[in-house]
Length: 349
Length: 162
Image 1 (tube, one colour):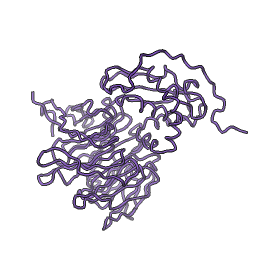
Image 2: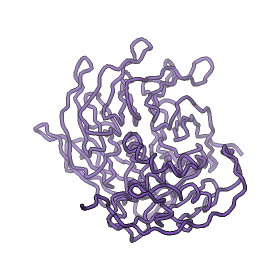
Image 3: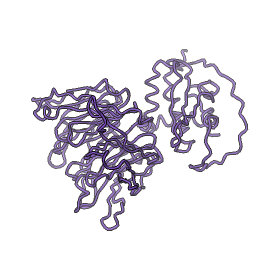
Image 4: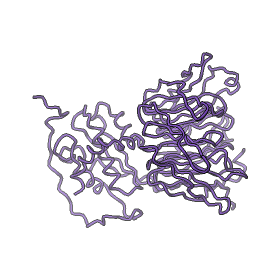
């Protein structure tokens, strides 16, 4: 997609603000099975108020309403939430050191399993593409891999040590069973299974960011990833996807580009859209969009700022997530306790 | 009997004379155009009690008005940088003091203000580590869910609400 030809005028239109949480909203996730002709879009959000809220857009009014509040399960902040690829299960990670698994049983969300084991706050949870594995990470510096068994049973398959500090986020590769983690120790680690079924770290990116790495996101093709950090930069990395597909665990991720000078406060979230637009959410209340720049000549692709939306929220933006269904629709959430639905539109002059 | 305190004999300084300020409205409008200045920020924190001694951070010169800077480079976001000086280089109370500063300002300033807290350069053995913790809001949020820590902080903050 060539954004240079679309006329340089983009604007971020606010569609709706979703209020309800009584504390900061840390994260949100679009249900991947929704947002099509048959199923109205659904979002799960999680908060410092210890609850998870499920929001759905009405087919009739096109307006978002809160359909459910998942409370009285987590006893502390819920830090992150993510739907399984089929959209049937929701995993929520909490400062109470547990990860809860929820299932929509006839419109009612029930907690069907609770994963315990981490020594302290769980920061992030991620399902692999085939829904056979779940990963969690924590301030206890470990990454846990859980096997998804029949009957909503989860068995710990591996406890991965290696990070020297708080692990902020983990994310499975979009197509392969390779796990990525980023940490307060400024590194990104790549984990894979060997022939004997043991998981271990196959790469540590140590000379990348110079402060806490808060998030990771992959492009549609899975051959590039972008990371964001407290060091005020976004970094793009690439790997030989064919090599990875053929099972070569020696394939390394290499630094492709650094986007610096665009952010002056911590970047908490980054998300790469199907079309190739990188969205970032930062501690200056702004949302920014970047695309690959055609102007680059020498060392491969570089990226340029497409749009900066100042005061997207009244406080820090903690998460930005593109809709899996509709084109250029995005959701963000903030310390201000709200979630906002946006559309990135081209403004006609 | 050896004292368990980190710094058993702190130097206590005189408090700075307080300038008269016009009466402020307790529930200031969040979006009031009136900017908050260094002195107002200092007023919020000067009377915070040191975790170990019955003296305020001002009296121990842990915090001073000059150590509060306004960062007004950006029109759309208002920031303060607060620098504090622990009384001793190996002070393990540094993170507690930093947390007290953070909590007091969080409760006192309109939410649109960003606050960065750091120890004065060269005054602490693990400066970078302390600064990193004090400015990681996720770590701060988790710490503030620890009732014991919150009690300690509230005890230090009590004199500063007068």
